[in-house]
Image 1 (cartoon, rainbow, N blue to C red):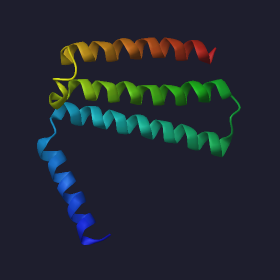
Image 2: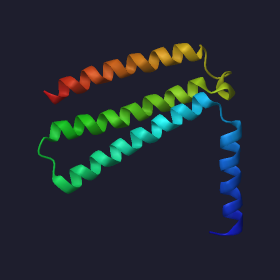
Image 3: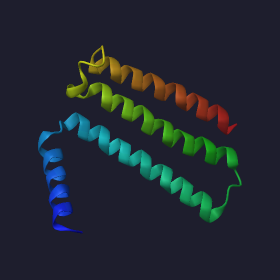
Length: 112
């Protein structure tokens, strides 16, 4: 990497650690977890096979949907976006929980 790339990455890391609220960092950690689960499921599917294909689709779809719900929560709870979204962070979290409950009922039904 060139010196300018290193400077950009170090500046990005510094700004993230100092300026990002803890609430958004927790959501980011959950999003990284969702990506890791999706990658692990996809790798397992490639290595072992897709015998219970419904289980793979349900699990992978659940990981993707959880990531999307978390991205929505992050956008709505970011203070910098308050002018664009009506409502409170608590309301956004209630939507997040409701969507997760609905998603997991669908996934459980899809598994059979």
